[in-house]
Length: 534
Image 1 (spheres, helix red, strand yellow):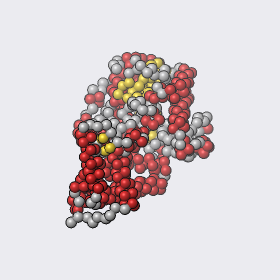
Image 2 (spheres, helix red, strand yellow; image 1 turned 90 degrees about the vertical axis):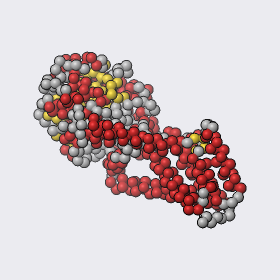
Image 3 (cartoon, helix red, strand yellow; image 1 turned 45 degrees about the horizontal axis):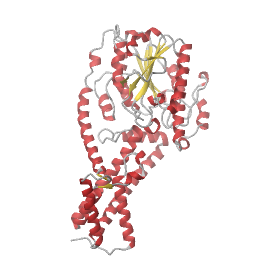
Image 4 (tube, one colour; image 1 turned 180 degrees about the horizontal axis):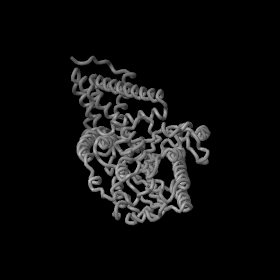
């Protein structure tokens, strides 16, 4: 039994044209925000003429089945494009169905921390409703096209001719006729298969640790008696030293840092590492540096913390250090802390901050560092300190206050109230980039002031960027390079890394070779154990 047909009318023709353009747009729309240009839509997706031919040739119940399956395929294509657009914007790479589904929980937590639970839930509900609305619109559009294709008349000949010419153009590789939609779905499936294989291999890698198996008896003895701090610097990327918009002010801030170290008779060496993430997911970089394994997705991270692999924290703990983590961004239970080897974790609630949050940032870095000095255990201490003030959205921004006046942090309330909110700053790309740079200047000034105030001849500080900022801020194709600095109160300590050929001072030369971040643990342990070998 065939579907009933109806005579063509102007409203029906307008509806059919809208449906045709809507399906066309779904098929040719790019999966990157920066590619959303008129030229991107001036293409013929070969999937459309194939679909039209099917609708012309098949009606009735089978036609309904074809429309239903196509509705599902187009909806999945839409979701894939939206997911890719989000991942490209935040991390400069496409979405991976196997590796990135777990990020939905992190996105929800970020929304809750930024907007509050109520607004976050309302936002999620609005997104789900919008997706279901689009699903319904896809179904209606295909139903309208199917009925139109079954109405006898000259339009059937026109549709058949268009389809035949378009398909022939694709076969003959005519410019402007593409199969991008099909290729995108195929690439998603292929990527998921490859990721599943990679993940299976990584599970085995996470259960062994050659570094731990080969640890020398005189483990880290060159640092004996020193407090060693690994400071993760949020969004501290190599673009700061290459992009003309950032370079001059960043070098000025680093020069001031050098001056503060000179006043304290401390020294620094600087280089570059290649992070495993970009724009976000800082914990992937943290776990990469600490474990010596490449952790570039959430599934690898989960496999790591369920395995028996060693970490730099465990190395220090084995060598006699008290190990601590200062985590101002942790507002929920963090069972991974024990796995990494920390004797104590100081989360946001443990640091005693009573001031207002700087949007997503729970507290300014100056308060974090002052609280650590107040709460840290007896030495020698090895601590991971995670800084937040240069975290997106970079508004409102803090500024340094006198250390003696920090108190419970309420002194910073005036800065929160006077600062520009994110919804104002993010109206202009130039404002966002300026605020990002200002946040970096603040953190560098805070770190140098903290080291000058509390550092001594028994202090070693490793400052490392976790990742580049989001590509929209960092720029296109900037890579994953991040600066790393080792600062010591005793100049002879850094003689151990002479073979690394890092730059003296806080301004790394662009000619310094960037190591993969996962190599740092092995090289560091080798350099500071026994006679030293990097």
